[in-house]
Image (cartoon, rainbow, N blue to C red):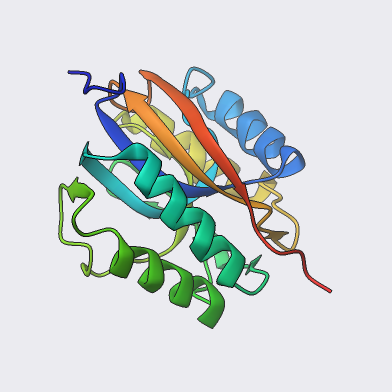
Length: 184
């Protein structure tokens, strides 16, 4: 069900750059998940189920973005981890990434409601696919070594994403893209 802004859920994410997104899409197609609509990203805060003031949220995110150092996303070894209904690329929880998430979580109360507490345990990751299908899982395990996400990426922006429907389908829209500092 859509809220006053037209969405059912929101997330604050760091989207993967085009080259990595294309590699994830290639892998999804190989394992039978080409229909998955979720763009590859690292969730900073997900499960926002109510948003009382979108403009205020965006103002807070813009302020946080100006206060952050550049953030490098680095993947763990092994890259592909099977988790619940799908697979993720493990992300190293760098001090900059953890600090940004903590600051965002600290400034959200009063303007959002979430499906879980903002201080819940968090394991950063890049979602590769979401599916309960055992054939997809077998294909992913068999083809895992073909997934090449390079050495990671520099986070270019903090994005607010709105979603209607559940992954792997549904629709999503990037509501706002807030630039992050570049690395020297």
